[in-house]
Image (cartoon, rainbow, N blue to C red; front, side, top):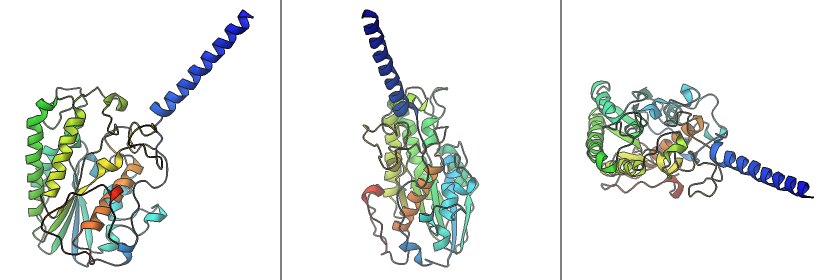
Length: 331
């Protein structure tokens, strides 16, 4: 009898340990990427007519997110999908791209993988030409993410590579980013004497707002979320200060698709798509993440572009751009 009781106890303990292991793997280790479309829906009605025959130049500025690192192919980067639908486009996104609206659009991507904001400033000054007056510019941009994550705690923090810094230590570098970003936005506008509009994404958080860097296989960084928030505040304020610069809410829309995507008890859990939108390097999106980013840029363009024939003229003062989860698109 004692032997049988001991066996039952061992079996129960074993079952509990197996169940706990399965639960841990399911909710803390497994990060499925899912399949099919990702991100918000894009309305079809704005694409029913050509907006303008004017010469349009689309340019990409910034880091590996705009360069497309992590996409399954070049034509699946957000920049290329924004410009033109790939051959294997999702049915719901057929004929929803800038080339449908703007038949005389050309494009060049100046983004460089691994680059930080100081390098973006140099690229704008040295690599981007000044376009003719009969050309109108559309600029898409991601800048600042590598300032935060480099060099993953392997080196002492410094400006534009501040991983591991305290908030106090990072203050002058944050101020430097504010000055640099505003100078970049002003310089970009001088490249288009015929006018332009700029779409600037804020910086996503692969920890889903939790801030536990070990969940993305990096050293703990107690001040990481606070410094990240300062960068995103600067991006928001820089957009609000200009009538032709618009915030793309990448941060808000990627919450729930990082390292805690399977944890249903988290604040940002997305039951409709509880999947991971990041590439294996953590810094960049995966293919579905790029689909979502393409949609976010496209939605901002549909809402704000003065090229759209049915939009009223812009008001002098900018209002804060909100997350697309809570706002509607003019159709």
